[in-house]
Amino acid sequence: MRIIDAHAHIFPEKIADKASEAIGEFYDLPMNSGGGSKTLLEQEKECGVEKMLVCSSALSAKNVESINTFIASEVAAHPEFVGLASLHKDYENYKEELARIKELGLKGIKFHSDMQKTDIDDKALYPVYEEIQKQNLPVLLHMGDDRYDYSSPARMVKVAKDFPGITFIGAHFGGYLRWHESIDNPLLDNVYYDTCSSLAFMKKGQAEEFINRFGADRFFFGTDFPMWDTKGEIERFMALDLDEEAKQMILYGNFARVFGICD
Image (tube, rainbow, N blue to C red; front, top):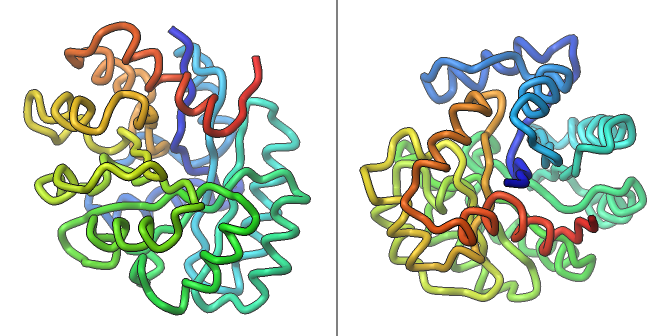
């Protein structure tokens, strides 16, 4: 089957190991590897992954531009990469930066509300969402985590309803460790989900329940590199009780359609 990894993080090589360790400490989980592009490409190519969505989250406003420049440089260097930019609630020049993001060839925005300590539906972000909607850029949202409420499923639903022109992707089946909430999300035309950092923790049959409720055409496969090993995540996904058509949609077709990947 053809595969796109719809959720991976990369960092400059000089800080890749340190950044990966910091993520592991944040989640109290062992990391699969360092977070450098070389390692990602090696792992993914061994498994036949054709494209990888890459991103990195700005934890302060001062890091927004440098992160976006870095992601764009990696996309330019590696045709396998599809890049997402980062923004921050306190970053004031978001209109100019969104214009630059499009010029750089980045394909959307990633927010990590828990690490950025900002509610998804914080009113300070609404002008940013309005500009993102005008620019027709998808938004990938880190979701869930029962230690915080910044990225609760209800907050994503509110924003998705308030900005119907934005395609939102709720990571981690819409709510890492809060799947009892996200399974009850309304079916919204502008909301998709990804599978990353979930399959190792979900109960038997739970992933299939989600996919059957929202539709296989609403899901992307992701690894959350460097959190997980690509081979292991593919094996977990392939073990799901889904037909071949549904698996291929989730592994490749849905992302290719939404992000305009042309064969």
